[in-house]
Image (cartoon, rainbow, N blue to C red):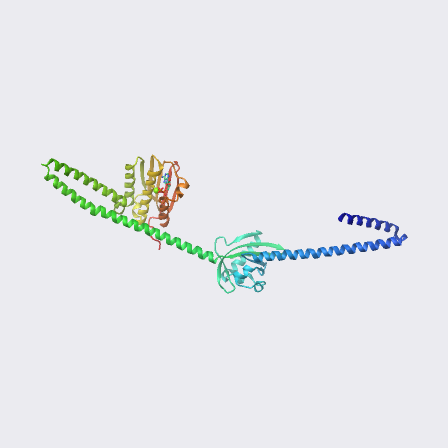
Length: 414
Ligand SMILES: Nc1ncnc2c1ncn2[C@@H]1O[C@H](COP(=O)(O)OP(=O)(O)O)[C@@H](O)[C@H]1O
Ligand SMILES: [Mg+2]
């Protein structure tokens, strides 16, 4: 088809040339060539006109398609010109701002921005225009607020883009109403805080109970056992003549001694009363010493920042003590270490405790073990008191736990 057309055109060109050369010598040839030229030009004009019409239809179809996409978007889409007058307002925008499209188009974007942000917002858009960046997220750090037609403010998440078209400049804002998400987030945060408070309260109550039992064991049972010991001594003195009775009394005395030390041990494990009576530093030193005695691990205890440990609040002392206890228990159970180092003191304005070993080390998987609650409980208590908690591989290859807590932290948040 195209080949035939081209051949016909070439033929017509040749005929034109011949007719031109012959000129008025062959008027019939000239006449027919002119007629043929007119016909060709006419057909050409018709084809061109048809093309223009088809292209126009295509542009219209594309436009309609784009509009349908914009209208079906879940997010509100608003386009403004350089004077920030609205030129496009999709269906989602109608719903979000509770404003009909024909009311919105042509009006200033300001009507959808709370009064107090208008000046700044206008400035932001103008600045964005100057940057030449094609698109970016709006309000990266702060929450953005928008205004419904009815005057109600609501939080949004938005991005802005810009483009030039036929010498004009447009800005398009795509935004989403995040009221519900914000409510859920706030609710989640509130619940999280409640759970934190609850867990802190449970731990505190447990600590109080342990202290109570430790005191009863130490004071009540301790006194009774001492009285019993005195009685047995009294008996022993009176049965020296009878070898069998005497032997029994000696055995009873030895058993009583064991009972006394067992009671002391149980009481101290529940809660070392010296933590309340003598303070954190002495209780920690005692704990490390006891651990060294009971295990084959060589323990080094160091204290730094003279006397500054005397002023720690009771919840901080208990938390630090329990962190040390758990860390030592972990070394005994999991590390296979030969040495352990404990450093307790004041660093800057924080109470600091470092427990390190030269054992097999710890992996992130170990720390995340679902059923292991020792380290997680430690982290929970410490962050609750506004402190920091780190656990990981030590420079020497073993495990290092580093805890820092403000010395005056109180147990339950206001
Ligand atoms: N000092 C340590 N050396 C090596 N591994 C450790 C050490 N402390 C803890 N771990 C690892 O981390 C895991 C989690 O510890 P923890 O939360 O105290 O729970 P649990 O002691 O009950 O297992 C342990 O099971 C162990 O695998
Ligand atoms: Mg443990």
